[in-house]
Image (cartoon, rainbow, N blue to C red; front, side):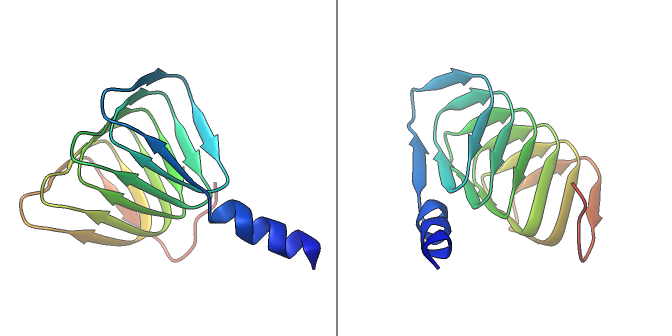
Length: 119
């Protein structure tokens, strides 16, 4: 039972990469992450990945759920729901179970939707 409580606390963790911050390297987290800065590298999160309007990622993204308002260049693997907001710009392939795309979003690549994914 203690392990379950610990896991729930870890997934409730939110990491913030603020605007004006640049990271060259991979990010791995067991919680959620919000990116308003720039990342050149892969982002792997067991929770949600949120990319703000000023956020930019060049690399692979793997997560449970995602909300993109910024730009991504690279492959995106989302286990459940990927939401592309009107200001988002995605160049690369997407693999997800569900996708929501607002009018105005830019997506260039292939999209594969499957009930379950193998990573």
